[in-house]
Length: 329
Length: 80
Image 1 (cartoon, each protein chain N blue to C red):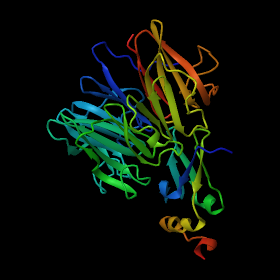
Image 2 (image 1 turned 30 degrees about the vertical axis):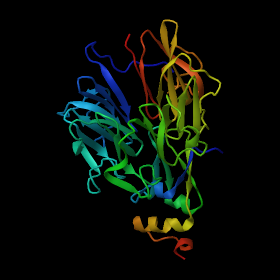
Image 3 (image 1 turned 135 degrees about the vertical axis):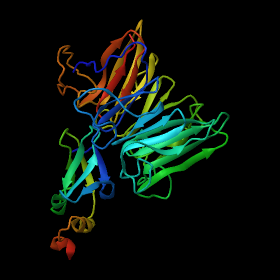
Image 4 (image 1 turned 90 degrees about the vertical axis):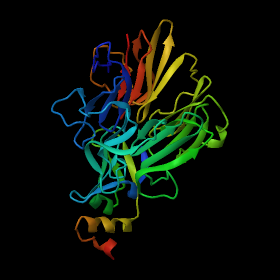
């Protein structure tokens, strides 16, 4: 399967982030607008006739966005947090009586002077709030059947709930899988793990180690340490990375639901390679047919497979059996 | 046979109108299994859009409440 061009933007429109839900994808532009494609049936994006990318009519200037299974969450330039779509397990954070919204509805405000970052996977959301000095807070909402947010176990957390607070440690990001999450601080240390973490992952082996980068598929944790990527969790479909592969020339990594993406510098260009569960063509083809645009099922279980070469470093993102590459050539 | 994951019945969504349990699949579609098939001993939910399957973890007595939700009488082995 050959990579297809999905969207071409004028040079002045820069892509800040691509976030993927179950069947919808949202692009955040640096000017605060959102482009969306895919399923809007539950209000996760605007319902619009036809296929393709469309600007979302939000009336907001967006600073951050994240998509989950059937919902989208966002922070605007006034530090307000919004949600839309369908969230029967509390994914909208709007309360037990509001599990569907067809436009962005405000969940909460972030205090002035604080910086918010959103993360989401499957049926969970987290909001990281960083101050101007050390310390941070993490709020969570959505499914809590695996205690992925907090203890004790409960079916749903319907409002943003403080799940982590520390006045000294500044969390940098939350890496989220289907039923678990990993909190990583600005020094690249694993600070906390929650939920049903892969049984072969032992957090004590990683605590105290710095300069780690942590990524999650739905059912696995991947830690970039030095020139290796260490994988834990489900590997029935090749999701666990090749232990012998050295990441010396790797400049970026992205994760989809059950596949991974790496960007590697090779001489004067960059190569994008995928591995893992590639049943829908999301890891490209192993047959090297440069004309075929329909998935040939050559790599349902894919070894690391080159899918694109770019002149400039691309951005890479993964969704549910989808791979998104932002080229800047 | 290798399944993608083992999922407890409480993690699945029950649709009373079709008497079906669903659970999100990493391809974007949903795994499906019918209540009636589970009563008959089936525990594998399949995705209509890909090759992945999940094993549903449940006890036969767990099914009674879902017959009730669907407005159907529970079959005798459960009801008893």
